[in-house]
Length: 154
Image (cartoon, rainbow, N blue to C red; front, side, top):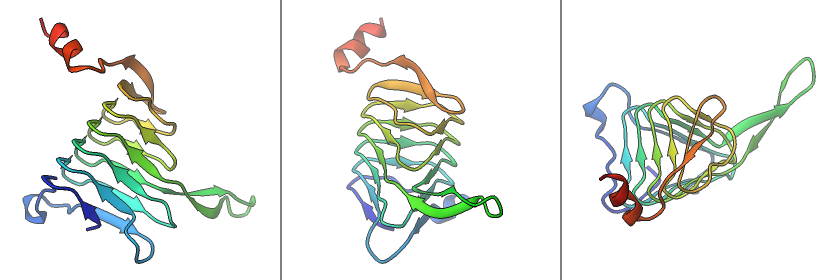
């Protein structure tokens, strides 16, 4: 794998049918996984062409989530998949990416944000915001402080 922080939980290969998949171009590390990250089964991390994929500390990632830093520009009518382009993806500390979400090139998911199951993230999501849908849109703001969470639980 690339760079993995302390206490990150990457399930062993034998615990499910599909291994964690990390694709990258070149010899330099392109994927950084922070401390205490939890990765679900079948997560695919695609990083290439100089674009980095950075996952902050304490992030939870559900099953079969796809991260891809690569896409294609629109090409000629006889070949619409034009030149390969790559943009970085950044996941902020404490975020939660739910099952089967797709994160496309150039997006940032802010600290403490939630991406709902099945969402397709085409634009950046602000910190402490829940977003979902196809394409993903903000659903609601989330408490930014631990005290706010305790008050809401009463």
